[in-house]
Image 1: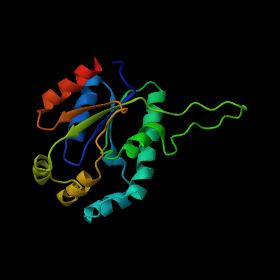
Image 2: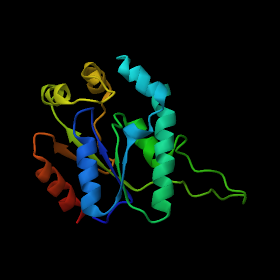
Image 3: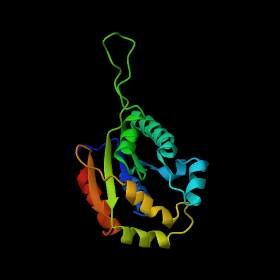
Amino acid sequence: MAAPGALLVMGVSGSGKSTVGALLASELGWKFYDADDYHPEENRMKMRKGIPLNDQDRIPWLCNLHDILLRDVATGQHVVLACSALKKVYRDILIRGKDGAPRKCDEPGKEEKLAEVNLLVVHLNGSFEAISGRLLKRQGHFMPPELLQSQFDILEPPSAPENFIQISVDKNLSEIIATIMKVLK
């Protein structure tokens, strides 16, 4: 498989996205972004209060992340992004931006090329019980364990025709990284 411009390490809170993403970026020599670092303060406050985010909260955040990916990939920089990206529409926004349609060009009869990111989705999946156990041990994060069920409720695991691989969180970190590296070779 040819290396994509960007890797999206996705999954519910506590699945290991940030840990896997940072280590993977280090191994590959790619730039790493943790989507949590780009949440506006209003989103963080909402989650701290135990209120799940809705599409209106997430879409501007995802559009910002798309712009960051597009900017880096356009300059030849490969990127690893750790982001929940729980719904297909969220992953589509990361790939194509909010509108996801070709822009009209000034020349009649021609359309501007769509600003799209070549993305491989790495879905870290696991049972509610396994991930809940991890979250209960985590400290200092704005996402409380009480919101985990809301993430499982809206999770749309990647499926064809998405470009994705799925890896169990039951594997150890080195096995997860090795699996991803093997797919990239």
